[in-house]
Amino acid sequence: VVTKLLVVATVSSGGVVVYSGARPFNGAYADAGHAAGKRVNKKKVVVLGTGWASTSFLKNLKDPSYEVQIVSPRNYFAFTPLLPSVTVGTVEARSIVEPVRSIANSNGLDVEYREAECFKIDAENKKVLCRSTQDSKVGKKEEFEVDYDYLVVAMGAQVNTFNIPGVVENTHFLKEVEDAQRIRRSVIDCFERASLPSVSDKERERILHFVVVGGGPTGVEFAAELHDFVHEDLAKLYPTLKQYVKITLLEATDHILTMFDKRITEFAEDKFKRDGIELKTGSVVMKVTDKDISTKERSTGEIQSIPYGMVVWSTGIGSRPVVLDFMKQIGQGNRRVLATDEWLRVQGTQSIYALGDCATINQRKVMDDIDKIFKKADKKGQGSLKVDDFKEVVNDIIERYPQVELYLKKKQLNNFVQLLKNSQADEELDIEKFKSALSEVDSQMKMLPATAQVAAQEGKYLATCFNRMEECERNPEGPGRFREEGRHRFKPFRYKHLGQFAPLGGEQTAAQFQLPWDWVSIGHGSQWLWYSVYASKQVSWRTRFLVVSDWGRRFIFGRDSSRI
Ligand code: FAD
Image (cartoon, rainbow, N blue to C red):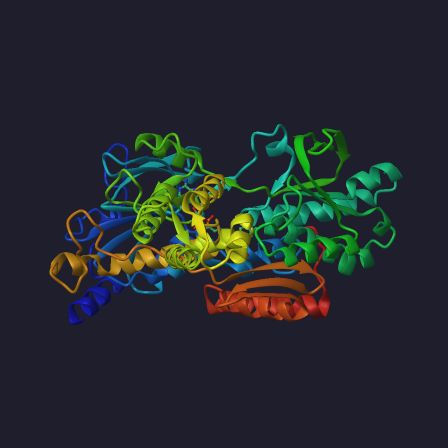
């Protein structure tokens, strides 16, 4: 403890000469202040990204024996669940961001931050190649490389456009703080343009047609926020324009919010109808031009052209090019998402970890484990189990892999759940049937949802492993930390699903929690729960104060519609 205190005290007082580990491509030391010496005996940890996963990792890392370098184009953490509120000014952009340097310094560790993006991971030589986000004096971006002993890849994902023509050029994404700010300006722009005297009524109708593509939680929340903004604030300022405003939500499947309980989906769809938000389900976007969006009806094949003033694209995520390139290097080129083992180690590498939206735990491994659990239960090898034993095995699987329960709950395995419920106790159930139903679902989507909740839990888990890593190496005989040869020394990562919210506008929110029973609550009460949870989840007291005061400001004065 004394040594740790001394190390922390010396580092924070600037008493140790620190070599950052970053050098430009010509090999010279990048940082003159650090050139005097190289830090010895410290393992270099490089963290790529400043989002949910990496911030949680940094906040929970306590062991001072690492030299940590963060590389990210964003020098702040953004509380993404409140981004839809930023698009209409319910909450200000600066209220939901926290500088990464203050997060990194909060636990007194040896952490450096570089504002740059990683454009190549060189796994063989254990280094990452980076490019600054700002131009240097000579108008070029600086390039440099950073060596690591351990690499933590937490770069998140990018918006998936499915290569649909015109999406990148003509729509707004809602992924970053800048996107939300752009959307806010664009909404006001539409209203100001529509109020010009030279604009015809038909054109006014087009300009004030707001289209949201994607009926997931983000698209739904944005549509609801926009509806509230228009009806609570803009209608008073632009009274003659209210009649022209239209909000349309396009969704390719048959329902919105499919990851939620059916009751929530039904409530949300009814509420949107009552609010006058047009819901077009079964509509697949084919092309977007600067004024029209072409859709194809899945049931009839009919092609429609919808004139619009602004489109927000929120249809899911895909891997970043740098991650795809890395996957090719390590033999994962045939996959869509970077695969890790259950300890979050990238498969095919030794010292690279990946967490959050940029990675997924290898499903094959999960399916193999499920296979083993069944084999153990089916002692006679009959390929079937009695109903009660079957239920026990399913519970066992859920305990190990809570995400499987999500699929059961989402009724993806509806037939099987019904079968389990309706069968007599002495009936035998076919194991293969269940496994193939599960793997079908499994191959369609990631086993873990791409959420902040997953990313934050993964970050915390990895930090806990890193906090104990040195101690385990020093003390290999310690209490059960090292298992037999070839196995990982820590318990595998287990995701704990706590629940989810879907704000639906008009001070109403849908909430779904995994208590011992499935708890669903919709309405004004859940809205207050949402306020409390999101206030408590803020990354610092500063942002907590700012967010809560923004909510108060909005209640008293409404949202600001200035176009700045
Ligand atoms: P991110 O948080 O996206 O962070 C990625 C980081 O990597 C960023 O700092 C980025 O700048 C950096 N980066 C990018 N490229 C590079 C590069 N080349 N080199 C280095 N760094 C790079 N989840 C919930 O659980 N609940 C919600 O209510 C919710 N609402 C959401 C609302 C919106 C509008 C959005 C967009 C997402 C929402 N999510 C929500 C999902 C959640 O934000 C993500 O699952 C979460 O951010 C994933 O965390 P991450 O750390 O993997 O990635």
